[in-house]
Amino acid sequence: MPQRSWLFVPGDSEKKLGKAADTGADVIIVDLEDSVTFSNKDQARQMACAWLTEQRPVAQFGRWVRINALDSRLWRDDLIAVMPGAPDGIMLPKSAGPESIQTLAAELYELEGRYGIPTGSTRILALVSETAEAAISIPSYASAPLPRLQGLVWGGEDLSAAIGAARKYDADGRWTDAFRFVRTQTLLTAHAKGVLALDTLHADFADTAGLKRFAEEARADGFGGMLAIHPAQVPVINAAFTPSEEELSHARAIVAAFAAQPNAGTLQIDRRMIDRPHLVLAKRLLGIVD
Ligand code: COA
Ligand code: MG
Image (cartoon, rainbow, N blue to C red; front, top):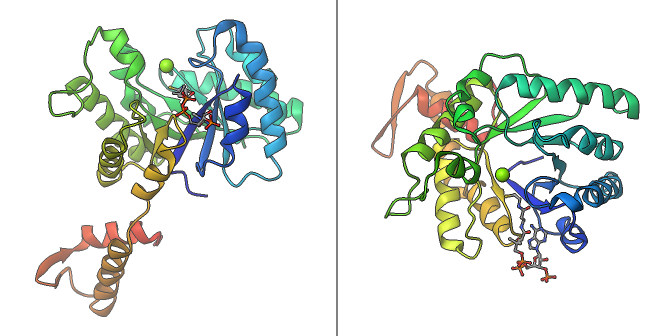
C-alpha cells in the first residue's frame, strides 16, 4: 500500500469522518489532539473507534489515530478507547526521543493483548520536532531499537511557538533555517533508520501551486510522503509522489544499460555520465531490491 498522502481528520467531526474514505488519501489520521477541544475528547475517542471498526473490513487505506502527547494525561485513555478498533498505527505528537516511542510501544503491547490484536502489529509514526529539546535530538532515533517505528515526520507549528519564531518562511517562501535544519535531520534520520521520511503539511490549503512545489521538492529531496489537512491537497500530493512515465523509463534505461555491460563502473546514456549511484537510485525508483 502506498503511503504518499497522510490526511488529518478531526476526530470529533462526523461530517469529515464521513468523507474521509472517499478522499483518496493513502492514510487517514483521525486526530484526537490539537484539532479537538478538551471538552470534545471523549466524544472524539468514541467516534474514532466507531470509524476504525466500520472501515476495518473495507479500507483501501491506512487507518491511523493521532493521540494526545505523553505529558497530557490523556494519551492512555485515548489508546484504551481506540485500540478495540485495531488501528494500523498511532501517531505520537511531541515525541521527545526514542524513550517516548518505547513508552507508547509498551502500552500498545498491553492493549494488543487485551483486545486480541496480533502482538507488534500496531505501528508508530513519531512527530519529532515540536519542542526545541526534541528538535536538537532527532538523530537519537537512529540507533535505538524501535521495531514498531513506521516513520518520522516533522512539524513547524508547535516548534515556532516553542522558539518564539514569528515567521517560518523567508521572503522567497522557503523554510527559514531552524525549520530547514529540522526537516533535514528528520529526512536523514529516517533513512539512517530505514523508516519512512514524511514531510510536514502545507497549512495554506487553498494554495495548490505552492503545495505542488513543496510536494515535488519533498519527493526530490528523498521524502516518501507528506501530511495533508484538506481533501483538496490529496490528489496534488499523490501526483507529486508518483514517479512520471518519463522518470520510470529513464530508470529502466539505466538498469538495462548496466545489465548489458555488467563489468562497467560507469557508462553513458544520451551523452550523460551514469555510474553506480545512478543505478542505485534507478532501482529504488523501480522498487527493485537486490
Ligand atoms: N477531512 C475530511 N473532510 C474534510 C476535511 C478533512 N480534513 N477538511 C475539509 N473537509 C470537507 C469539509 O467538511 C467540506 O465538506 P462539504 O463540501 O460537504 O461541506 C469540504 O471538505 C470542503 O471543505 P472546506 O469548506 O474547504 O473547508 P472547511 O472550512 O470545512 O475546513 C479545515 C477547513 C482546515 C478546518 C479542515 O480542512 C480541517 O478540519 N482540516 C484538518 C484539521 C486537523 O485535523 N488538524 C490537525 C493536524 S494539524
Ligand atoms: Mg500540534
